[in-house]
Image (cartoon, rainbow, N blue to C red; front, side, top):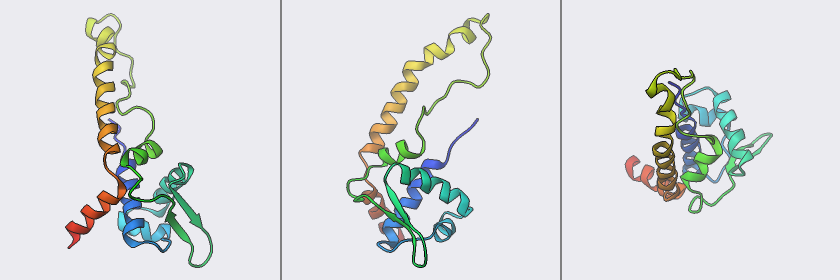
Length: 141
């Protein structure tokens, strides 16, 4: 089973940018907070930059900054930027077409899984980055 943590880490990164802002943060500093390799952070930041959520500046004092107002940036947008695709991809192996379950399971599941993905995205879209930062600050105090 392949579960992605890109959304959780990207949300951590963006929350940190707001929490520590407005100064730019280096990928090394961000990686220290996430407790992962800076290369992992840079890959996610590249996706976030491509979605126009962050910008980078090189040189001394350079680093990463949020481009969007955290009160307007939803977690649904973050999810779309780093995850994309379907939440529930079909099985990697092709089921047995001679089995009545194997032949029909994916088609039977399709509607349920699409509804679940729509519900997830709708929930994430109701939460802004600013709200998440407020929750983190409240928990930190």
